Length: 487
Ligand code: MSP
Image (cartoon, rainbow, N blue to C red; front, top):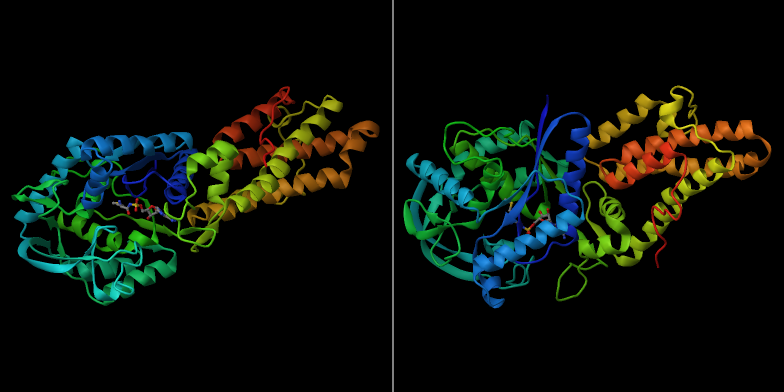
């Protein structure tokens, strides 16, 4: 059986999950479900990044101990993922004792190999990014991401010999052995690496909330180093050199462009330092803005996934999230546009198609559903179903390219076709005066709808099930509505 390992970044728990986190996580879920439907053995990892200065400060201002704080916050993430029907296999937390032990043990090994040395570090540090910045990174002296002035830090520090791995990283990325998609992201990383790669500080003296360095407990481990190991410890890895855990390396690692550089450099270098194989592929999606602005709590424009679930239902929210970003691009969202799209595609599109078809089918007691009439379906005229193989090949290709929005658009061609077909054939008249023709049309509609439902499984698992049940029963339950009308 083919194995498939997919990861999302582990999110910082200083805040609640928003639509950006939800996008990456729902996308991972869609891919995990699709690969399962291809009969692959899937492991889908999510988690929480719980150490570092940012969390320490957030806990302090919430008047809580860091542990108390992260325990609560990690629950928020778990709850959000449950509401979005995320089928993850493990939720790794960097405060898990087993993770901490494994990180210490891995660092011990890397230290013994002579890849870690001590030196003075002086630099500008942005707490928001949990990263050192160069003057070039700043705009008007501020971190462009967080609009805060980085602090000058000077301290004795332990360094990891990242520079040593520069050529290996460059070569593997160029050869697509370590694949970075889309192409422009790959090029961005390559030109960043061309500019040189410096050794990085992996220790923090003033941050208490972290994993103590195994070879010098006066320091804690830099939060990013701690975090990368989650992709191993999430599979039960204990930091020992003997044996790489089952499922490793990842087939796909998802993230947005904000954290690509660190992922494409430090992470593979750590793996090489431990003689562990590299991830096969990164997929880097765009960034959300809300009504044209960066989403931020202070602007009050954050779109929370839980609010979306409340308004649009779980599958409605999943659908809207997945249709919000075009391949390789950033995307702007607003409640108005989400609501419009819900109405057009779900309430009036798919929802209406099912309720109309079933109402008309009942008029002539049409009970022919796909399983009962194998081979009798003529759905030659519907776009995706024109030729089953061609249709699924197209989707398969889009899945390989990781184009969720485009997959949904393909599926919606069928939905739109079917709605138009009802109009064109004036099915409401046929059921009254040409039962035979009506049955033929309904046969095509049932086949198309069943196709749509099958194809929707990874995106809208509950809705897909419901639709298939409706087809099987030949009717909708009294008062059953797939996508309620909203304002
Ligand atoms: N903790 C680190 C990741 C460590 S992984 C070893 C981190 N956390 S984060 O909470 O800031 O999450 C960043 C990721 O969340 C992005 O790469 C992306 O997957 C998702 N998003 C957060 N905000 C986003 C948008 N506004 N738009 C799209 N996705 C973004 O970085």
